[in-house]
Length: 246
Ligand SMILES: O=C(CCCCNC(=O)Nc1ccc(S(=O)(=O)N2CCN(c3cc(Cl)cc(C(F)(F)F)c3)CC2)cc1)NO
Ligand SMILES: [Mn+2]
Image (cartoon, rainbow, N blue to C red; front, top):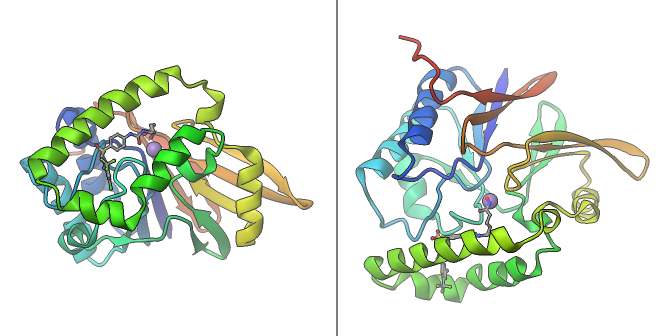
């Protein structure tokens, strides 16, 4: 049987091509799978579960159809959609997991996470992350009027776009030592994450044991899916303009 992993779709109303590719993926590829894991940055922004739109309704409905059919669907917060909460879970049937979770993938204990916690050299980002993950700050932010939160979100998106251009490529990637530290602490030899937008399968060595770090791809110019079968896995792409099957 098969388990699917996706992340970094950065879905937004401004990118109907990504949304169409995602909806096609959900309609055509999620029959008879064991589970779907979404490892963060499903959305380009998320300022509260109370935001609604036809775009959001369509995406939420796709998950609801899947979970109502009995396929478990799990989500780990990304650096964009870390405010996704209980109401979103209720509306979609999605189960939100802790930011670092160990799952048993057909007998292989695997640490799954978004990946932004591995980029410890990006100190400015880690400081910002600490603040916005503070429960009191989140409680206060959630009580601001929706219109104001949308404005704050747009401001953050402009500034983070600029900040990222300024940052060197290397600090935007994971710190190898942190990867090893976290895998050793979790006592695993397999990790799956997203965030860096550098899809790849890395072989590493942890205390003499062979280990793998699987990085999921973003969906900026094509879809990216990790198809994990009982005894093999592969990172696959999904073209936006693939002819629909019917
Ligand atoms: O993303 C990458 C590379 C870039 C990685 C770093 N850049 C990045 O993460 N940018 C970013 C993330 C989220 C949004 S947001 O619009 O969704 N939104 C902003 C306001 N948020 C907030 C929450 C709280 Cl509790 C409190 C506040 C407060 F108080 F500070 F105002 C604000 C909620 C979330 C906008 C931009 N790779 O994948
Ligand atoms: Mn990210």
